[in-house]
Length: 82
Image (cartoon, rainbow, N blue to C red):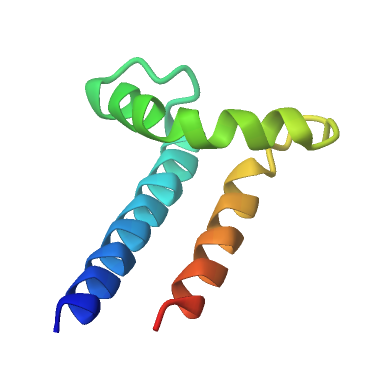
């Protein structure tokens, strides 16, 4: 019972973080400078995960592929959970 709870809770946290990353990507098209409170919150929450991946990736011009990599990694981890 306890293992199932931890697995489901971890799955919930990962999927919630995935939604935050998607929200940041979508909001970046509307508000690229992230001046609103919601945009600043999304940047503060997601940047510690996106920044290291962004540094490892080659420069892709004006496109940032780090959110895509994070979403793919989250998908692999969620599918690997029992």
